[in-house]
Length: 420
Image (cartoon, rainbow, N blue to C red; front, side):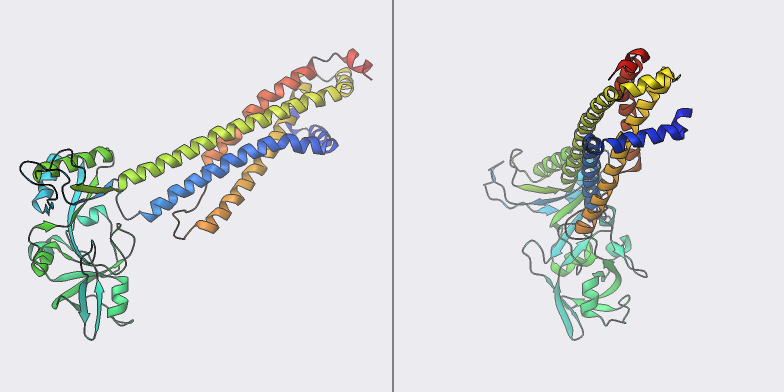
């Protein structure tokens, strides 16, 4: 350890590096590329993780959208092509029979699925917007960011069939004056006056939402549009520890039983499983991280072996020098430590340069793709991963340095002095 802080040790190391600059550079490339690949791929996969988490931060990860279509097979006396209509009571049956469900929100809409948008008026201003009939439970699945002073639909709104609404940012800009507070104001939906109780900030709560959506109580929606207990689709969230793919299968099977659909009919009940998409994305990201680890370690190992080989050559070239040092009283441990420290310096120097270059590359990727439409955000490598890579390089450096070090120690002073 004392030798590590000896000034003469470091002078000798840097003299050796300067003496063979090209050879030193070439031997360091392997370690540099290995750590650069590891940092680059690990950071890139983390950026992908962060991007998708940000893109869907407002919606539960284990969520799905379940909807109905027409049957593709005859069953129980019903012909092919029968249109399945989801009902409000289906939600209660699903809650009872599918234990994986954490929250379920029946939803209706005007302005999506090919339906005509709602005609909204306010004085002389008017526009066409999507109008959703919702329950408060929807916010357990897809969080709605409501601006200060407002709120979302609550249970009292449902029970009392209140004519209240939550409007979007764009709707506010188009129907209200810039300096006008919309909370407490009124808009006409299908010529029925609704009081604005909140303005939501668009955050991507699902594939059907945008910044102009209007939300009203489900009970009020069905009276205005005369939909009865019909439901356009269910937004469902499974528990975090649930198998979301199995949950989807159970939900579909339950709805087929309720509506007398052939158990093998895959077209009558459809679903968009966001949880499955998340799982594939994160599995890919984890695979990319693991690949970066394998490739990085393999490349670092190859580079370390190259450094070991070069040090063996260096020891052979310095046979006379080492013999002189032994003859002057240098102990075997001092000679061994000298070679090991030299190996560590080369490996850590190449590794640190690789980490710095990898970090610069990740910063460039973040600046190029972050904040845009592509789901990519803040590509970084956790500090423990960087520390782990440095520890790995130190361990490999010591192990690979022992080979040339032992070769140096095995040189007899008398034989070294005879070396020409």
